[in-house]
Length: 461
Ligand code: ARG
Image 1 (cartoon, rainbow, N blue to C red):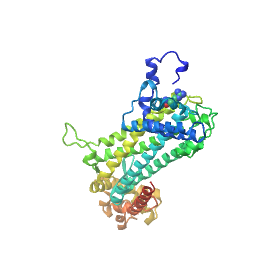
Image 2: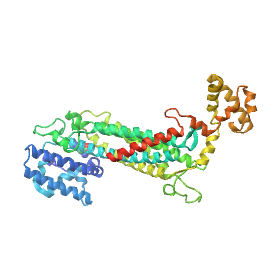
Image 3: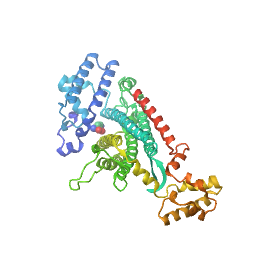
Image 4: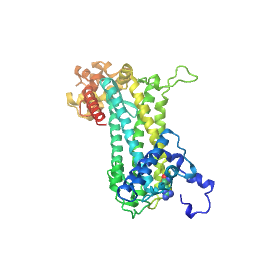
């Protein structure tokens, strides 16, 4: 492509370090889309003739078909996806192919391709996250009343409902979707026409190409257009946070499906057996969701390192923005799909959850609150009295609601029969009606709100 200035071919090792086609062929579809928009604009502005534009368009469409059919051969000697496509265009339509690169550089070309790629990946991730949210909401609705232990420090804290716990993830995923959608809105500007770095002397129409590619507007500064990858960083940051959320849910699934907890069973479709221990049901998919989070965080970190010392405008360093990003976004899509499957199929064990919810004196706070509300103790005083009652239950080896009234009155005379109203787990969760609290009526309402919201989104999509 630049043979004019060079007398000798590149060293083999040069080709190996320099060529990106092995991975950036992933951008082929976006590259052709960008070229089609560019060639239309070149014709509309009279920079090339309509006849030549039509020949180039036909050639590009043939190439798109070849790529889709898997019969296109990418060659390392041609360095990257852009030059592979241009070389093939030359084979197909002859020297007129050389007009396509008028008023364009690979620098604005690759920036455009990558934005198109990230944009469609974000759309796919968003749809996957919405599906996962839907599956969580369905389980939440089915388990609005199922009690379980709520934990802090992984110690039994206060009873909650299983539905409430699942809806916490629905909220997290909503913010993940928000972050991805913010990134999408910010990246949706078109670098094409920035050329190598300074713009071009040809009378191009950047608004036309931007619109043709579905971008909101052309990028305002040619140097910025070819030299920043903040849109990739922002997407990877959002992806990392989403992965962390999935990883935490995965961790809970791993814990809860362990017989030591017995809260949850995954379906056969999402478990594996052991080659030696016949009784085993391993939550491999959940474990891998947890583990793959590492490579997404690493992709973010890796690109931060690539970018941090680069002077404006383009440097070849930026070619290293792609491999890890492709792998990270693929991993996230797979994690979301696996999690959606696990959540749809999983079966909670309400008896076991209720049993666990009742252990660990989980209604102690309810007792303290009752002493404040009904008997006028200060909260600190009530905390102390309750602590002594818990110690008494522990000494007797019974739950709070199995203590006798005499046991409790021996600690504080003000306690009466009414106390038993608040000591059961079911009453405890039912009483947590404050906005955002765990009461079954809240959970049902919130799950229904989410169902409607997700349904509406689906219609829009
Ligand atoms: N393969 C290159 C990349 O991914 C395309 C841009 C090359 N530009 C250049 N001036 N060598 O970054």
